[in-house]
Length: 149
Image 1 (cartoon, rainbow, N blue to C red):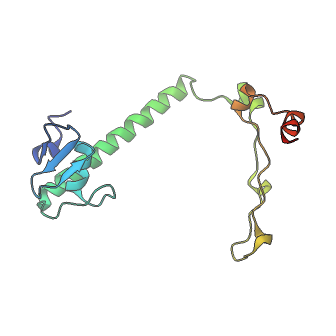
Image 2: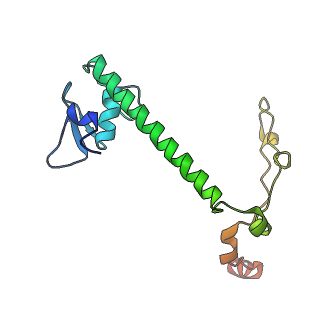
Image 3: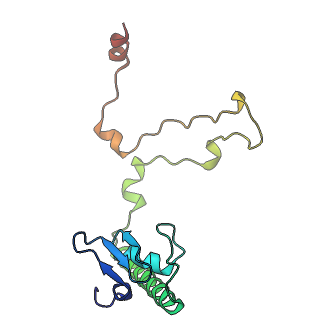
């Protein structure tokens, strides 16, 4: 919840744009909400630069909070998947197995890593029909040939 988020103690929200936050330590404006401010305070994220002036205890507090939040989310998602599986909501191979084409990895040929030149171009995968192909009719070849003439 908003009141429990520790990043709100260390940043100010922009009055005009609620997604902009200002770091209390260095004054940098982060766009992307309080999550991006947490990444700025914790450091080590590619979405934003780490704050050079944040005290170590604040950095540790934010990192611990983000790790706890991630673990809670992962546990919730895993529990949800288990309940879906137990309720029979997962995909069942027996009912819709005819609609799917399976390919073995040995059916697809790739060029060797060290070779160069046009002779080592990768072979194209064979055209596979997917579930959306049921809704579209193929283009008749005589219509295509008629357009070219």
